[in-house]
Length: 280
Image 1 (cartoon, helix red, strand yellow):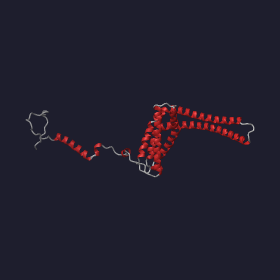
Image 2 (image 1 turned 90 degrees about the vertical axis):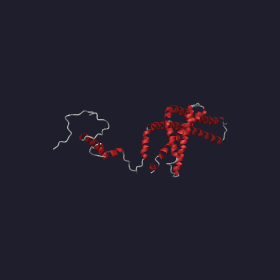
Image 3 (image 1 turned 180 degrees about the vertical axis):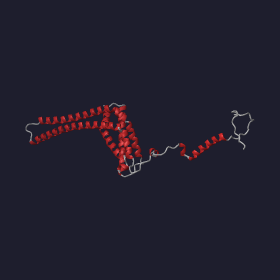
Image 4 (image 1 turned 180 degrees about the horizontal axis):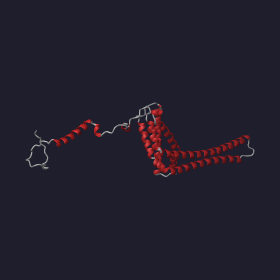
């Protein structure tokens, strides 16, 4: 029922999730690098900002569409549909540029996340060193409460090391997820025609009868071969009359008025031809 009422809903929800993930995992770090100066100002930075705002506007329009659907309001004639189609066409046009820039973008993202992971690791090591230094500087006659604080600090250091290991695992998972997503994106742009045909087939209402095509009308079965002139009786009789007039000219001589003085026969007179009636 949902596919019959609004077949575009599921595709828009999937696009919404993918675009939000791309904004969070790719475009936001790249814009951060533009602000930091890692990526110089120029055409590339302007392209990243344009793509970021384009994706945000696209997601905002999808959110508005979902709000309308949740309120059970008719959306087929709403302007948001035209806006979504326009944004989708622009995003499809950017696919060629994205494919050309994908190696550079992957390299920049890898460097960004490597630096982030190294920074977290240094912070964790620094906290461990602080706890170890506090242990060495304490006097021997420390109380049991101080020993308890040292134990708590050691536990915190162990937790921080565990968090660093978890961060490494999360980074590895993120790299794998990014590679899978890029492969899925290439496959999706490669099979875009197939997806559009599938969407058109889903948009068709299965409850309606299939329309009659010219091939069906033309397929009449075993019928005898007929001439084209036999299709229309009026045209057939007109052609028959035209041919009868031609034959009549060879049988009965037409009466010709003498508009000019008689100058003889143009084609000559054959002496052996007789066209008179015999008297009985």
